[in-house]
Length: 67
Length: 262
Picture 1: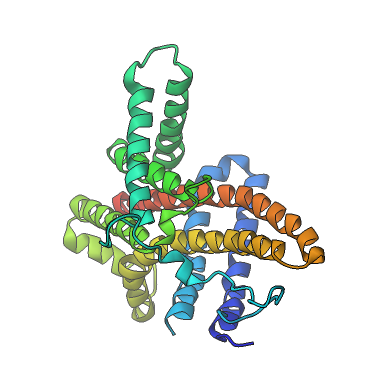
Picture 2: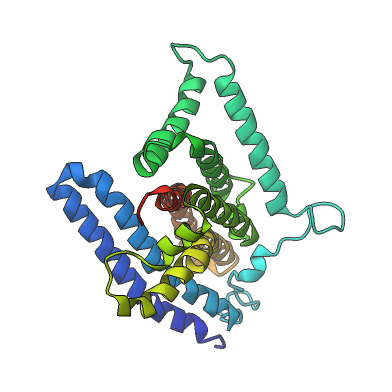
């Protein structure tokens, strides 16, 4: 069996952003559940944070292709 | 990964789908401009134009079914994406956001439409162009609103931070605004469509390969096809969600640029 270890490395590196994204949305859901009218305030914050956390996973994907 | 032989049912091993499956040959002629993704993009533009022209042609107070369908998509982008995020001056950006949403959505959904079955956004050049437009839009809006120097100052020196923190913060903020934001916007869409298409290929090609095997493997293959079909519906969810996130993030970036304080 041949292959590149890049993909294993990428899988490992995706764990961090996955946990981060999960925590961001958990906090968002918690916030909206406690205070439903805060949804419009929380939504942009949640999505901006999610975009930033996921950026790391996306850079990892690029490096898995490039290296 | 390319030489990973999962099964040796009929002598020839199973060749798992790889990045090569995304380099499609030209449909006709020998030029590089008639490949399937490019034709699909043209098809999407025609489909969207025809649909919304028909939906808005005989607009009435009591809408027809078609007009209702068109208006609910437009209303979703205008109210839930643009107005809720950008604020009072949102109408200027609705045409751009609406075009972006419908274009990305239709091109994504091509991934599970029978016979077409290729999400054109899984070729990275298309998301790059879209993200570049977003990059131009939100920076030019910010510069137009605040002036170049104040806009850059707002990005580089966020208020209420100790002076020493700027050593760390300023490069990070600059990288975020000019590099990370457009790049991840494009790559997020690309990666989701790419991985989704690869996932479907694994199940469908795997099921096809199992059919060629011995009788025991033949009995397993319906499960592979069944899972492929189930995954197609999961992909529909991802495709709609990614179109929404692309538009929403564009709206959020524009909102950040027009806001008085970052």
